Amino acid sequence: MSDTFDIGLGNNFPEIREKADSDFISFWEQQAKNLHWFSPWERVLNWNPPFARWFEGGTINASYNALDVHQEQKSQKTAIFWEGENGDSKVLTYAELFESVKKLANVLVSLGVKKGDRVTIYLPMIPELPISMLACARIGATHTVIFSGFSATSIKDRVVDSHSKVIITADGGYRRGKVVPLKEIIDESISELDFIEHVLVVKRTNSEIQMNSVDSYYDELMEKSSAQHLAVSLESTHPLFILYTSGTTGKPKGVLHGTGGYLTHLYSTYKWAFDIKDSDVYFCTADIGWVTGHSYVVYAPLLHGATQVMYEGAPDFPDASRIWNILQKYHVSIFYTTPTALRMFMKFGDDIPNSFDLSKIRLLGSVGEPINPEVWRWYYRTIGKEKCPIIDTWWQTETGGMLISALPGIETIPLKPGSGTKPIPGIQMSVVDENGNDVKRGTKGYLIIRNQWPGMLQTLWGDDEKYKTVYWSKYENCYYPGDYALEDEDGYFWLLGRADDVLKVAGHRIGTAELESCIVSHTDVAESAVCGIADDVKGEVIISFVVLKQNTTKDTKSLESEIIQKIREDIGAIATPKEIHFVSKLPKTRSGKIMRRLLKAIASNEKIGDISTLEDGTAISEIQTAFDELQKSIKENSN
Ligand code: WT7
Image (cartoon, rainbow, N blue to C red):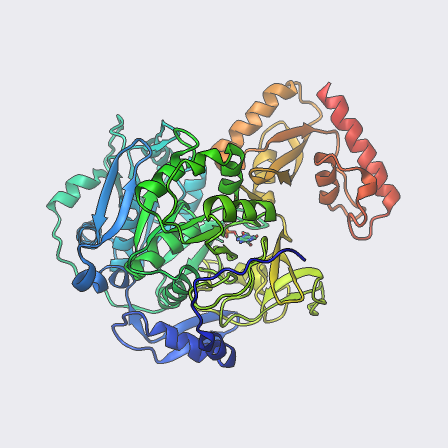
């Protein structure tokens, strides 16, 4: 299928897979013993389909496992080298991080935050973000972090859904040299909410902001706060966090993760995949506002007492050398980033990374979307100098941690550019057809997971029914992630993109339904459909088709900017379409379904002849007519 690369780190622990294959439940039980538990579990897995309760009866605390456990041996070790976008920097030891987290835990308690309460966190990539998450975890409050690129309306939806009474934000955040007015956005988002009791404001940009009756400055409360705090003992299944993510229908859903199982999954995968050593300097470029940041910036590295770099800003700001500069400055040995970032770096040319000392790097990782084989090879050659394994890690917000990845920490297997290799130990995966039958090796189908794993989501916040239908109804007793995949002759998995109406733009999930309903809420719009087309940097970009109401008199130029403005306000800039086509009608099947493949074909400039099976049950002549009509309509409207 492709060339292979035999490169590993010399580790070889076949017994790990053997144990996992023979009994995944007792295997994970063994793994859980790597963590600190206040009291042991009574039952490893209580599986009440489709609800899993891992390590039931055991008590634990995530913040204790991230901080308290390191104080004896590693208190002076660097936990975080923080690099601000504007050149500021800070070094936080495990002792310093511990002290700040305990103080903030006391602050939250003094504000009335109790075990089980939700706290919304809307912060840029500054140390106060992990500190806030760990302070919540310490007292048993469930954190819900919102990516700092989301709009006021998105925040409002999430704050209402999670019913957070306390919000932690900053006066502003730096992004490409500009200040994002985070506090102003929070003020707008909560202006109609009467249940908000406190907003804590971290000073980052020293912007002029308005302080309201519910607001207090983070620093002022921290100064007065005691650094004595005992982590609360929590049930293993206690909700650690809610993270909202886009799906195929409606508004983003709150993915709920528990504590003991989630931490077990992260502890193990971090060790297996990254082969983490005390001497490593790890750098993951993900924003903590997404799941990669929750799992592999905050929790996994801290559970291991690792040293990491945390960077506040855009990877190409102020110029294309920024990232390599950071890698050189901090002697980074493990680097974990996205295909979108790699495609951008690759475009900038080899001279830039070649002019930095990247000799400390020993392991590279990729996450979030399929990586093109030629980008993989570039990463391997130019960044890894042909001596570092690359792990291509497949997982989801819902899975909590990696489920497919090469695992240089435990075994050396040949790597194939573009394949994540094999499932991690303890995971039973298959590729099946529409009816749930295994497809032949080498055939594209739907990825499914047949058993449970400790990092799996507990449910969707407040919506058990939706949890059942979204993930567990397509195939009986199997988890359906919504991805196409193929398993090759060697048992390697190739992830082939989303099989549902979810787009992946620069690695971020965008639900087509959410975007369409936002566009349709514009007063002049009658109907809308969006699709993704291939893009050589972002992987996928959004193209939208809009049918206007008949009596609309506005010109399409101003409508286009109004619609874009609306999307930015309702969702955020990440959902902005690259093109908007105004058309007189949308191509539909006889049963009224929008022919999405046809839209995609037109937007990608494919010829109708290139498309064999477009929409099930629709005659080719009908598709041809729809295709011609749509193209004509696009032409007419763009004149
Ligand atoms: C979706 C999940 C992985 C955490 C960050 C994204 C796609 C993710 C890969 C990969 C091919 C990938 C899938 C998946 N995806 N990693 N290595 N190769 N596709 O989490 O936002 O929940 O998105 O990202 O389509 O379902 P997410």
